[in-house]
Image 1 (cartoon, one colour):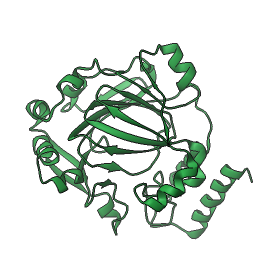
Image 2 (cartoon, rainbow, N blue to C red; image 1 turned 90 degrees about the vertical axis):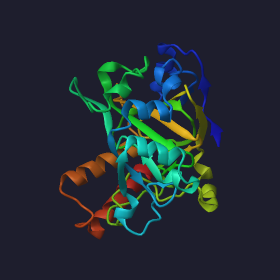
Image 3 (cartoon, one colour; image 1 turned 180 degrees about the vertical axis):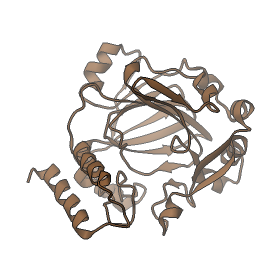
Image 4 (cartoon, rainbow, N blue to C red; image 1 turned 135 degrees about the horizontal axis):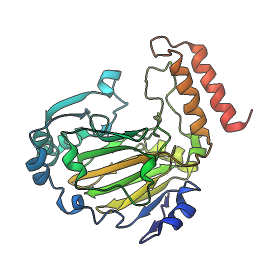
Length: 307
């Protein structure tokens, strides 16, 4: 595993030339350290500010999110409901073995969406946006979505890529996380869930990165890794595979997604384009046919081998 390059005090033109345009990950140390959230986002602060707000959150029977070892799809994607204050208590001071089973993400509540120049905010959570700012490296006219993430120690997100085709700035505001990233060119080694297999998370890998045998199998994919501390800003290029290990007693981050100015064509983008077209024709797991799964397999083979 190779460490992701770390820089400090980088200028916009250098970031674009060295990282954004060639689509290479980088950790900008202290890139969001000036955010008010880095100094203020503790469980006590968030409870005082929004503790009364009722939220949904991911609810797993393990520390894995989603838990693809569960027997049914509803179990894999189960959610719970509580006030934000109760959630924060559960993930920071509840039974230690239970703290990693709850995970609040943007899937449940986005903070901001920008489409065609128009902003849509979650007004109840809008006060959180006052404590952060859009990174200066990100063209504001291409901002797509802003999400917040909250967790306790031990959460591990499953290996996946984002389907929106966006670059991502992951701003670590509290706690600590270790990330592992794989380039889109390693699609053939990722063993993605396929239509007809019973799991609709087609952007996720079948691989459990915590299993020793799977780690050995991934070695040829040449993963990149970094540990993020509060104030660090991680650039994840569009279509890169990633998984996170949450290490702090309390972890919080904000993700800023934006559309690339000149998207690079790669294997994962082509795969997702095919899936989007298939879903647009009315495909669903219930109507899956072996021929459709076989067609995707052939498409993936053509993407990787050129045949």
